[in-house]
Image (cartoon, rainbow, N blue to C red):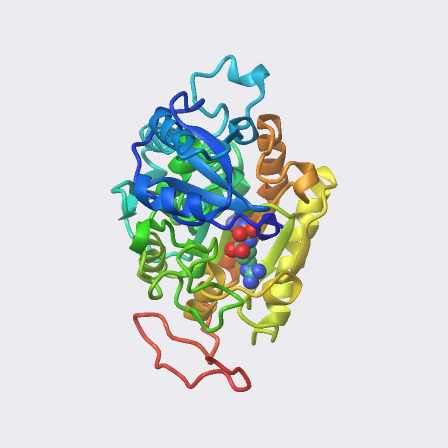
Length: 429
Ligand code: 0X9
Ligand code: CA
Ligand code: ZN
């Protein structure tokens, strides 16, 4: 999956963002890795994006290109490889720079419009502010949305990773769907009445914006670090087993899985943490792409969680529902055992802190041959449709199982219970 693509961001520098879309000013070029390039990168403050098979990808302005040429470096224009995905059929009718996908601005506008259209059911809440000062927006869907009703809450997150554009759309469409169906569908009405449904479609707005404007494969946030290295992997920055080894995350700021200098060093992860600790959350899905998986804790170890059997049986029910819609197969498995180890990921922390079932869904496609991070615009709706019954079922489950108990091995919610000793048998570095 994604990490197999081996995009290893290297040195990056400050540069002025170009205009949207076709990036008329900035080209993505590649140059062979060499001492001359390393020297030029520092001197010219180049925005180095990644290294693939000995070639370094650079987001280069016209003046960068001139200077690179003056250095005698062999430049290959790779821009076409990184063009935003769009299908002419739908984009022709849309003025959006990325077609049916939401930019941050479009998302903010569409969420605001939902609140205006459904004032009795929807609130847009700013749960924090990104590094580049974008409000991190949540849509709260509930009866009496202006009140804290002390109902079980369920959380749907999208876009920890900038390039996973489809992961914005599924939670957004879920919110819209609940609002549209409330009046006519008694099942939806019951869920919205009895729970608070929280949706944060774009946890990483800065990274997403960078992926839209400059470099489609950007993954991390846009933290500027020492030596011009950019980005913390937000899905390695949470506080459960953070940095417990260098396999599940990296201490190297150049890495695509850089965990940051401390747990919750990033405002984006703090925003999610503070939301989760602010009320009674009973279940969570964090959407990513791609691979068609539904993963449950732990991710930091191959050992099972205390609630393994619940996490697995509920997860399997969800994947059964998903498969039934379009026949597309999603595999349910423990994250650390089935995929690869991660530490500091969202769902490990959320499960540890609250005891709620917390799932990562890796949306389609199955693999790079199916398009990798590039889902066609026409696939957005079918992908949403096949996730919808599972999302509804999880809300239903949370209503029936209020107030999860934290794993006794794990930290308590802010409001209450005492900290217990670490889980036996797990060696932490
Ligand atoms: O590596 C990640 O953060 C997630 N995959 S992605 O390709 N979207 O980046 C997977 C996180 C799930 N947790 C574990 N595998 N432990
Ligand atoms: Ca409610
Ligand atoms: Zn991801």
